[in-house]
Image (cartoon, rainbow over all chains, first blue to last red; front, side, top):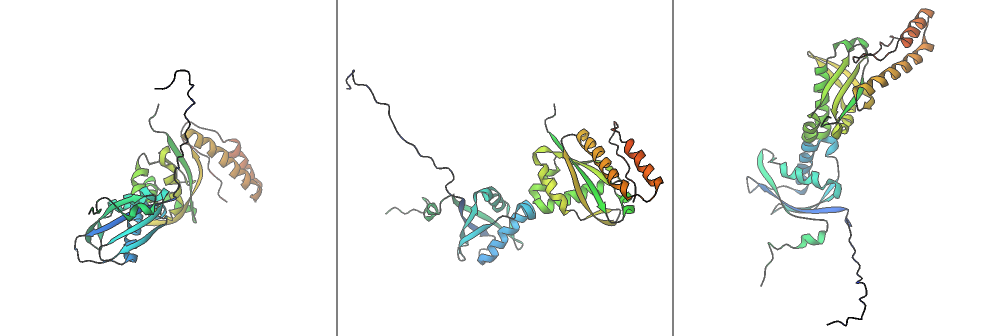
Length: 129
Length: 159
C-alpha cells in the first residue's frame, strides 16, 4: 500500500528499436529433385538460381548480386545471402523455379533471417535430451 | 475520374534510311516493345507492363510514336526502349532505335511538346538551307505550327 501523500515520479524507461541493422538477409534453402540421386556443384546451383532470376525478372531486373555462402552437395542444402532490396525477388524466383535440366525440382526455404546466427539452429531439428 | 493514371511516352523512331519509315505500323512497334520489355524485365515485367499498354499514335512520315501505359509502371517500359534494335513488318526487318523525347501525363501535353520540338528542329534546319526557296518553305512551316484537335504534327523538311 502506497502512502497517499507521496508523489509518484513519472516512470522512465528507454526503448531502443533498431530497424534494418543488417543490410543482408540470409536464407537456408534446400533443393529437392525428382531424381533423388542427382547431384549438383555449388556453381551449378548458383547458375540455376541466376537463370530463374533472369526468367522471372529479366536481364535488368534479375541483375542483382547474391551469394551462396555454404552448400552441402550430399544433402543439396545451402545458405544464400542477399541484400535486403533483393530478398523478395530472390525468394519469388526460388518459388517459381521448377526445372533443372528437364528434371522436376523445387526449392524448400527452411529459414530466412537478417542475422546469420539465427540460421545456426531451428526448433524443428532441436533435440531435447 | 479515371482509376488508372496514364503516362504517354513520346518517341521518335530513328532509321538509317528514311524510306524505311513508311514500312512502319503500330503492330510492329507493339511487338518489338513487348519483346524488349520481356528481355529486360522478364516474365514479371512483361506481364505488368502489358496492362494498359498500347501504341496510341504513329506517324510514318516523321517516325513519331506515342506509347501509352500506366503511371504505376511506366519506368519498366521506358527503361526497355533502348533495347529495341529493329522493327519487323511483313517479314522485313528494319534496324532502328527509339529515341524517347518526352514523357507526359496526357496526349495533349505530348502534342504541345511536339509542336515546340518541331519548331526547334525547323529553326535548326534553317541555317543549313542551300537555297532561298528552301528557306521560305521552312519559314512557312514554322509559322504554320498550330495545335490541332487530332494528334497531328508538322512535317519536317527533308535535308
